[in-house]
Structure formats: C-alpha cells, structure tokens
Image (cartoon, rainbow, N blue to C red; front, side, top):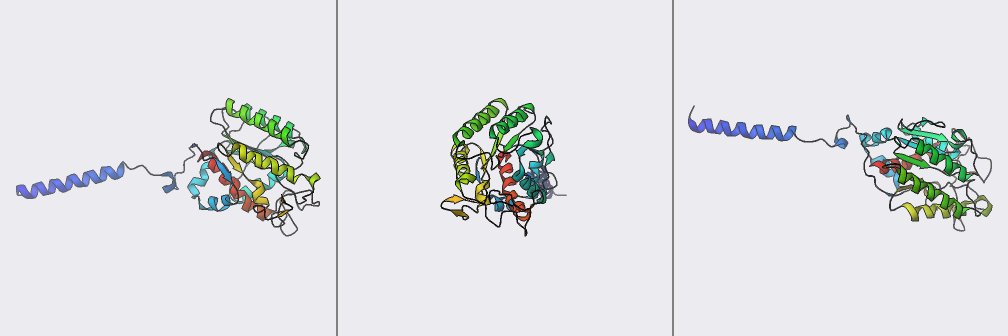
Length: 287
C-alpha cells in the first residue's frame, strides 16, 4: 500500500471514530425518549392556569405528562373535588386514596375533608387547620399541596378572615417544608348569583389569590373554567355554566344531578375536560 493511500485510510478512520464518540456522548432529552420518562422535580413555572390549560395539557408529550405521577402531591377537597378527581381519572391519572395520618408518599393522593378531619363544608378554618397538619406530618415526603375550598365555606361575612387564615397557613408551610409548592385553586361557583349564595364573595377570594400568589405559585383558576371565562354571569357575578354543571345529560359519577341552584357540581364529561387544566397546573408546579 502506498504511503498516500495509507494516510487517506488513517484520516477516514479518525473521522469515523470522532463521529462515533460524539454520537455516543449525546445526552437524550427526556421528552425525546418516551420509553424512559423522568420524575425529576423541576423549578416550576408560576402563574395562572385557566381555560388555556386544557389545550396546553393536550400539547404535552405522554412521557412528560407521566412525570407528575411520581410527584408526592396531596389534594384535599370535598364534593366538587371528587368531580375533579374523577375527571383526572378519565384522563388516565388516578388519585391514591388519602386518609387521616397517611404519609404523602404515593404520588398523586387525594382525600376529602370529611374523611381526613371529620369536617363538613362551611368550616373553612378547620379545613385550613387539617390541611396544615397533614402537610407537616409528611414534610419529608410531600412536594405539592392542593387545597380546595367548598362553596359553602365563603360568603360576604368572612372573606377577609378566610384570606388571612389561608395566607398564614401557606407562609408557614413554605417556611417549614423544603422545596414545597402550593397549588392554589380559586373557590368553586354555584349556579345562583344571589348574594346569599356567595359567588361574588368567592370571586373576591379568587381575585385575591391571583393578586397575592400568581408571581410565585401556580394558580388553577377553577372559576374561569366553570364559568367559561365569565361568559356565564349575571350582573357581573359569575356562575357555573349549564354545560359544565352536572345534569341529566351529563351527571356526575359521584354527585349525580344537582337539585338546587345553590349547588355547582361538575358533570362527568365537563369534569374530564376541566381536569386537564388541573393536571397542567400540577405539571407547572414541577416543570
């Protein structure tokens, strides 16, 4: 073999070796490798998630969506929260049942206040107390806390007091639990817009949440989703839209069909759609 030919072969071999090494050293992006999803908990993206969250969740890859299943999360609520849990389940994301004193160590976990603390709707301060206790009991495990008021918890008489008690709880949990993320949820609406049924008062609390926490935390705007961004309203007071409320054509799996305008449970089909924005909110907490 001539010296010239030998040099050419050597050069081609060197180029091939460099290309092979470069390819093997490339780190795969988790989103490009759906067979190997990661549950890594990121820094999160604070802000408001409303109706836009539905399409945003649809656009997330399957591998990325699966990450939230590994994030220890507790969602405490009452009946409307059960509609949301069922909606998440219909999208392939089940919530593990959570009882009083359980550890928040099984990914997505959900419980109702009447089971966890024997608390009925209408007692927001006891709900806040119980939520705080459950979070601190799992301070070494929990990543995300999701608190949902009931529509009977807030009226014109207690808006400021509820806001103060809630913020005190949030501040304490953030100070005592390393890396803790609070996912806020604007309080639910009912169909009635009468002052005694509380939608206007709950809107005040929802707006306060957005003003107070949107720069640092994720806020799931349930009110926007229930009312179709305020399309369903009367005199400036938002209400749950008929197409989102449980009905004979779209009953709730858990709560059936409402019998009073002072209620606002979510239908099964509507819940599946609305729950996508809740799942997107959880994803944004650890994105």
